[in-house]
Image 1: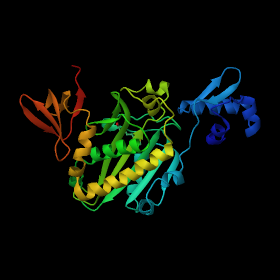
Image 2: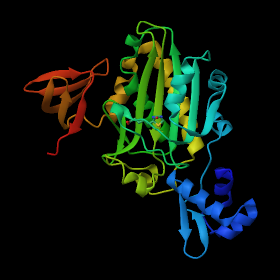
Image 3: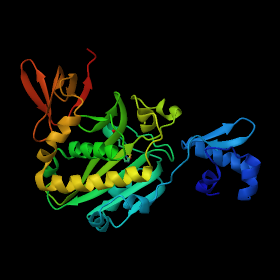
Image 4: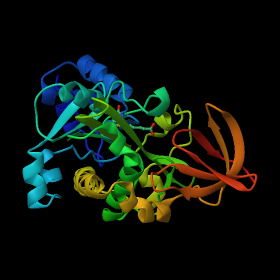
Length: 324
Ligand code: BTN
């Protein structure tokens, strides 16, 4: 039984009984029950409506390549070709890392309804329940080496904020280097992985996860406080296809501008959304831990921290805001 066909039979308004589903899909009630349990385990929002069967907690809008592409400028559309939409992948970023080895265009994009092995930064996993969030990756090839990509992850963070704003979602900010937080909780994450030759040519796979609807049972299993757009705005989240399309459009703009001018072109925009500036911070890196105060980022995107009357810059570190 195709799981999407079953989900399409369920509605967010009215419950449908197991026997009605079995009759419509030409299978047994036991087969329906088994599929519902499997879908629930993938995070699909299926509720049991007491004595009346099953219904969806919210209407699912499936990812659709054409609807995403409609958000792009005509010139951007020509450069992308298409967005590969998958029902399930291990990880959209792993998929593009595999595809990077094959010949192909300068920009490749893929997204999935769910990921079985979604990956976060620093070896963490990224919970990827089915049908409610965005799991999106973009591969960009560069003729030059990796050294020119310093600060790219911060620039990508500003693209995520801009795409959210395009869809009417305000109130998110950036925690260095590229966590997207709202009300102190994680709304979206960015994972950038590089491949190819250090001195060039090379490629970057930019993986972005955005929580639009994160089921409470899933949020409870994540080891850091999370929030979704539905909770942030207190309203129906934006269309997933519109958000994915705007994200793609903003990323293409960002990559073009970054290619021409580097991080310097994004420093002002990053500063407007910098959640760490002026905050009491604890910074941990290979040399140890210091307590200081956030002092923005430098022209390369390194974190600046004031400590004992001087400012230190960090290219890579674990940072947390200290409770005052
Ligand atoms: C983070 O730890 O903040 C980064 C999370 C990145 C998650 C996204 S979801 C799409 C892409 N595929 C993955 O496996 N990871 C990224």
